[in-house]
Image (cartoon, rainbow over all chains, first blue to last red; front, side, top):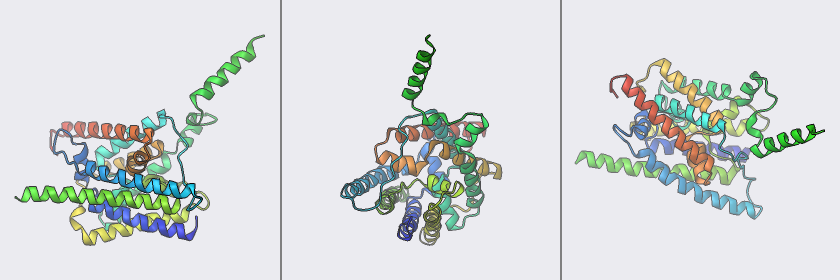
Length: 169
Length: 148
């Protein structure tokens, strides 16, 4: 990662944080308001996402176009495609934390920069969670040789078929 | 009417914030090729790899600066006290961290970037954490006797 990339990252971080503050998502009551469907529902998050998603999508298309012309940086593309147990469990746990605290990583860092006192313990706990939540750690504890998520269902099936075939005398 | 004015203001604020957020996340992709998944970027600081630390650290530093600027220009967007007990604050933080690491993304990673790239995984992730979030809050209000 070049210094230029790092500078762009710093700028983007600042803009993202300011955007969260602008949209008031730095307030736990606004985030809780999004999930408080039976109570004081706050559509701010919905509006924020409704504007943010298309905005990002257009920028992404621009980036992809440039990449196809061999211009700009290599684009990072997530490799995992399947909706696996890890995703479901992880998203569920994330949701519980969200519902309890009304904050997620973006607003937490933004609030930390703003100097609010509760942000520091939250960010510390979050960094601990990010460290502890590494699946490889748990797979190793369970004595498995590799995390299951990296092996596709097709691969597992093929392996089992091959094993059965090899046992036929 | 004050209430309507407030609601209109909040609407435009959310829209403007969202537009800026999407554009900034897009700028990160355009300029560095990286996904603006804040949990993922921060996670890379506690799971360090060579050549990955500088941009992540500067990204987070940028966020802190953005927060500082926000505090100056938009003080009403911040609350001095989250109204949560220390245990709950820490617990929520750990759960957010663990969940984001397992799910490989958070609200920005899956919610904006993943959905923005039309990823089914991300749409599912958003649906799941919104649901468990809503259920958690519901249970929470129930158990505290309906107090907000």
